[in-house]
Amino acid sequence: MRAREVSEQLGLEPLEANVNAVRTRLERLARDGRAQRPGRGLYTAAVQGAGSGA
Image (spheres, rainbow, N blue to C red):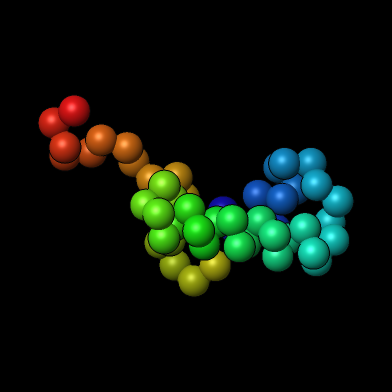
């Protein structure tokens, strides 16, 4: 999903400031390994525990 789609799903007003805030949060989640970035501007949830044997 793109940041704009995520902000819409969260019910936020379609303001550029809201989209930018969501984009920043998604970038942090990707950096922390809690989200994945399969392409420019696209984000997906990270798969937890894949291959860790947990």
